[in-house]
Each structure stands twice: as C-alpha cells, then as structure tokens.
Image (cartoon, rainbow, N blue to C red; front, side, top):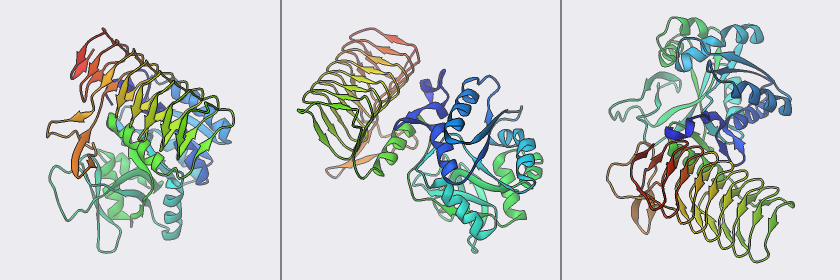
Length: 395
C-alpha cells in the first residue's frame, strides 16, 4: 500500500465515514456474530483499543490476540486457535480477512450458504484479472476441487472465481493448518478431506492490496448508493448545486456555488469551498477541507487532509492530514501501455483510458503550484517545495 500504511494500518483506512475494520465488525454483527477474536501484530497498540471501542458500541465481545511467529493468514489462524476452540466448543467458526471492504450482506450470505449445505464454506467473487488472488477451481459437483494461489499463467479451465476473504471452517481445520506450510495448502487439504462449498458474492467488494484498491472500494460502495442522505445538521448554501445520489454528513459545509455531483460522499465536519467541484465517486472523509475553486474527482481523501484553493485532485488517494497547498495538480491519465496490477481502465467516448493520479502519504505536504505526474508516490511526512514536478517516488 506504499506510503499510506506508515503509522496507519490499512484496516484503519476510512471509506464513506467508516474504517475498514469498523465496517467488518458491523457486517459480522449483522450476520449474527457476537464474539470476535482480533489477531494483531506484535507492536500494534492502536487496533486493540479501537476494537474495544467499536465492539462496545455494537454490543459485541472482542478479544485481541497477538500473532505468533508464523506470518500471514496461517499464523493468524493458529494464533487464535486456543480461544476459538474454547468459544466454539469444537464447532465451526468464521474467518474474516481484515483488509476486505464489502457491503452489508457479505458475511450473512456466507453463513446462509454454510447453514444450508452443512459444509465448510468459502466466499468467492468473480474477477477479470486473477493473477494476484487465490483462484478457485470447482469440481463437477460444484464443490472446491483446489485453490491456486496467484497463478502465473492463464488457465481457462480455472474460471474467474477468487477467494473473497471470508470462510466458515470446522475446528478440525486447525490440525490441517498445523501440518501445512501456508494457508492455501491447508485449504486444499480441507477440500480433499471435506466437501468445501462456495458462496458466490455479487455485491460491493474490494481487497485492499494496492493503493488504487482504495479508489475501487469507494467506487463499489458508492455504486450501491441509490438515493441521497443529507444530514439536517449539514450547512448547504442555497447557491450550491447538489446532484444525487450523495451522502452528506452532520457538520459538513457546502459553500456558495459549489457543485457536488453524485455518487459522492462528504463526511462529518468536512468543508467544500466556494465554487469547488466534487464528483465521480469521490469520498471526502471526516474533517477534510477543500479550498475554493478546486476540483476533486474519483479520489479518496483521508480524515483531516486539506486541499488548497484552485487544485485539481483526480483519481488520487491522500493520507491522513495530508496537505495540498494552492494550485496543486495531480495528472491522472496514464499514457504508458503498462497498466498497474488491478487498476481498472475506463471507457470514454469509445476509448480505453487508464486513469490514476497520485498516492500521497500521511502528513505529507505538497507545495503550491506543484504538478504530480500519474503514479507519483509521496512518502508520509514528506515536504515537497513549491513549483515542483514530481514523477515516481518522493521521499
């Protein structure tokens, strides 16, 4: 995730007013899950505190567990082995990845499928490009035959269904995990020893593996917004133009002659200045300031970031408290034929275009009149002098 995760783990990224972690817990609660074990990194002090705060609000029970020496998913699963066996009394449990963004019915659909089939179940989504995912090969009976992790060559017999980051697994899985070198190997062992069912998910979904996945996640969530929700405690100028669907939260200010063209999210206490234009799946998070006559489109601005007067911010991710001084431009039309992995092109007037702006880290400051070339990466805390032209990584 580049500069965005310096000091802020990706499960604490904010999208449409909720952190990734908060959205996961809320969706688990909607699916009927009451007790959750959260596996955290050794030095992560933020997540356990935030988990307790969210759990208390939702009426859930949460216990944090430090991840053991084994890395990735397998290590996380084994770290929670004791507490899960204690809680479930050797029945099944739900495993949820912490970097998945999905709409509210995601885990419910998984549990319904598992209850109907009485088999271990994994969630799956259809993807055009599968080389960065675990790809599911289904057998003739409709159950999982095997899973191929990040296939290096195209195999048309595999199809396009990939692991979606949610599973209902029996506690017997732990024994398979203990004798496996990685999580996919353990899943394949489960598929051989049990019938492993698949729950297909067609709603909003994104796996946050690359910075532009944040843009894709915001777009997917906003695509499901069909009507406007505007807080009575938002302050909207009578000369502002609001085109639905939009979500405008409490305390937000939309100043004179500003245009907000949905689908768009404007968070709590955000400020959109005079004559500014916000459109095309932008997610403006809590406390963000957008200066007069700036344009923001297809971008995600993390809480308390600031966009100065007369900026153009397109298809860009700005980290927590990032600052764009006046007249900063993020160029966002990629002219090279080498498209970044998972970046979805757009079709405009019959032409295929690859649009991606910049990735600006937490507390970075972009000097006035600076131009950021497509795919510029600005490290957290970096300070770019005015009148700069930035290409590639800037530290």
